[in-house]
Amino acid sequence: MKLILTCEHGGNKIPKPYQLYFKNQDLVLNSHRGYDLGALDVFNYLKPLSNYSKYSDNSRLLIELNRSLHHKKLFSEFSKTLSKDDKKQLISNYYLEFRNNVEASIKKYIYSNNKVLHLSVHSFTPILNNQVRHCDIGLLFDSRNIAEKKFSKNLKSEILKQDKTLNVRFNYPYLGKADGFTMYLRKQFPENYLGIEIELNQKFSIKNKINKNLKDVLLIAIKNVSS
Image 1 (spheres, rainbow, N blue to C red):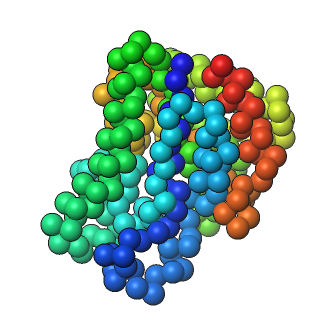
Image 2 (image 1 turned 90 degrees about the horizontal axis):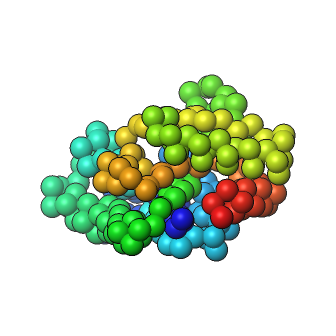
Image 3 (image 1 turned 120 degrees about the vertical axis):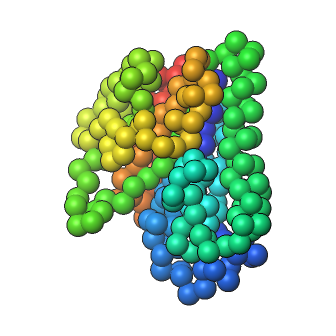
């Protein structure tokens, strides 16, 4: 099995041509809306396990890499006012550049008779709309997919072997079959592809770094399950 590792929301950078649209928006760019705090740190920690990896450190508020092109939130309130030509450039230079490279890598491995495990690293804010999210690690998958369901159960078991105090939940705080990159890829590769999103609670993030114990737990668990 080949391991593909991605991080769609690793940073909050805004390329120079678009900075005018985000003037005086540092507060929102540095919040959970701007990027997934700690996700890139975990991505880099897990990277030695992967056969292929790719991340983006541009803000999701510029263009949302984890949404379909038709999704109403592909562009945020800051970037939706861009011209059609500018939006086409964003799609070409950032969105498609990221997604097409990942898809090509998966295709290469599957066409060489390999199975592919795709882990997409994310994080979530502990409180949303005044509601506390009671979860430490979320594993998102398509519950209709037997292989993804089995892998997620095994990964949860391995995580709890390392640290039984962690609250690991399936398809929380989001559904794994909702619009997203893994959902798109399942349609492209109906066989030999497993797409799992790992969601980490941002309460473990300090200065954009995730607690080392949690990173070690994930590293060991993923290594044990995918070997």
